[in-house]
Image (cartoon, rainbow, N blue to C red):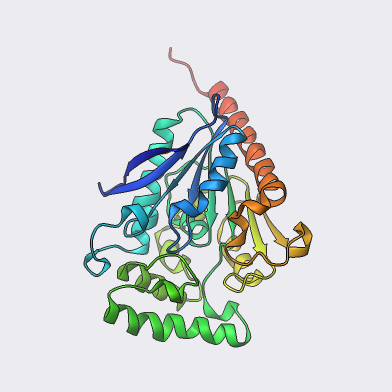
Length: 301
């Protein structure tokens, strides 16, 4: 069973989380960064699996979502930047305090893989991204392109101020999203450089600073994150150690995977085990790099 934890975001907002600990000393600490509007419970089985592989794993809800929601969304002042620079950064702070001295790893689903790039002071040993995409509408094709264009230019700008939230129905699942988060998301989506339209003028933030390995999964039947969009986001990260992995449902004996399927328990023996191998490798490399830095550090006197 996970331990319920209260996370303090960088601006003091309290967030709900669950910490999954292995039976012995953790060999790594993994932050699971959720997709837009998806509560932390969705990732519980995956986090529990990571704990059985010897890694501590933290799931949590962004402000306004799940256990971190306080009152009507219309009254909540929150932006997508807050989810990254304050909420995710605060979750990292808790994880480092509870599991000190272990390599820090990031698992980002959809927007959770995008927001890694705007958190600049987090020493990530490695990152696994799933369906994490750049959101500019031109990266889609056909009718789906028209739908994404309408989402950014019409539906969110007009509907969200009226309703005081982004309805979950427009996301394909999950929970309603705070209005400020949705409106900033749409602003990024109207820009060719998407999230880099914000991070670029600030020196690239985490996109420029993160140098650890990244594996980014593109799912062939994921209509919300086509391969071109996943490639585009991966291209924002400056690290030379990055890999795009294209997965087709038939590769893992499935009929469908889609945008949300990766984290379902039926993929424990396939996608999850492959993910655990990468995370363990990144953790090992992180430990070795830390040991080298310690050896090279000047001694007093």
